[in-house]
Length: 251
Ligand SMILES: NC(=O)c1ccc[n+]([C@@H]2O[C@H](COP(=O)([O-])OP(=O)(O)OC[C@H]3O[C@@H](n4cnc5c(N)ncnc54)[C@H](O)[C@@H]3O)[C@@H](O)[C@H]2O)c1
Image (cartoon, rainbow, N blue to C red; front, side, top):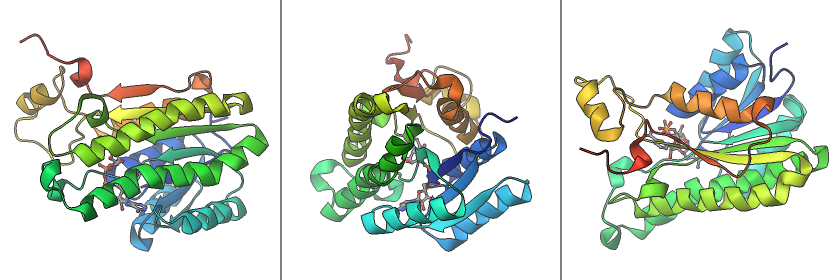
C-alpha cells in the first residue's frame, strides 16, 4: 500500500512550476490531489496529467486571496474527493517583473504580494484547519523562501510575507499539535526554470553545491513532510537551498 493511499491533499498554486511537481509527488505516493490555482486552464492541465497517470485528482480554480472562494472550494473538495488531511500552501511568488527597492515600490505590488503569499496561505489554513481539528489528523506544509531568512534587496514585501508564514507556522504548530496536526515550512533557494548555459558557475552563486535547486528538490521535501514518517516533526522551516543560507561560503 502506498504511504498516502486514501489521503486527500490540497495543493495551492498546483498549476505552477513547483506546485505541479508537488502534486505529482503526492499523487504518486497515493494521495487524491485537489489542484488549487487561479485559472481553469492551469488546474485542468495538472489534474489531467495526474489522472492520465492513473492517480486521483480534481481541478479547483480559485483565487486564494478571497476567503469565501477558498472556503467554498474546500467544501467542494470534501464532496468530490473526501476529507482533506494534507494542505500544501504553494501559491505565491515574488512578482519578479515588478521588483523595486521598497522605498519606491508601489502600494499595489506591496498589497498584492502580501495578499497572495501571506493572507492567501492564512486563509487556506483557516478554512482547512477546522476539518483537521475535528478529525484529529492533518499535515500542513507551507512553501516559503530563504529570502525570509537572509533578506534580499528589492524583495522587502516578499520577505515580509514569507517571514510572516514562517512565524505563523511555529504558532500554529503549538496550537494544533494536540490534534495530531503538524505544521512545517520548506524554504527553497532560487529554483531555476530554464536550462542554464553554465549551470555550475550559476549554481556556485546560489548554493555551495554544483547544481541549482529544482522543482523536484522542493517537491521531495514537501512529500517527506506530508508523509506519516515525519509526523513528529512540527514547527520547522527546512531550507532547500544547497547550503546557500549558511552565509559566507568561506571564499
Ligand atoms: N521559483 C523560485 O525560485 C522560488 C524560490 C523560493 C520560493 N518559491 C515559492 O514557491 C512557490 C511556487 O513558485 P513557482 O516558482 O512555482 O512559481 P509559479 O508562478 O510557477 O507558481 C505559482 C502559482 O501560484 C498561483 N497563484 C498566484 N496567485 C494566486 C492566487 N491568488 N490564487 C491561487 N493561485 C495563485 C499562480 O497562478 C501560479 O500557478 C511560491 O510560493 C514561491 O514564492 C519559489
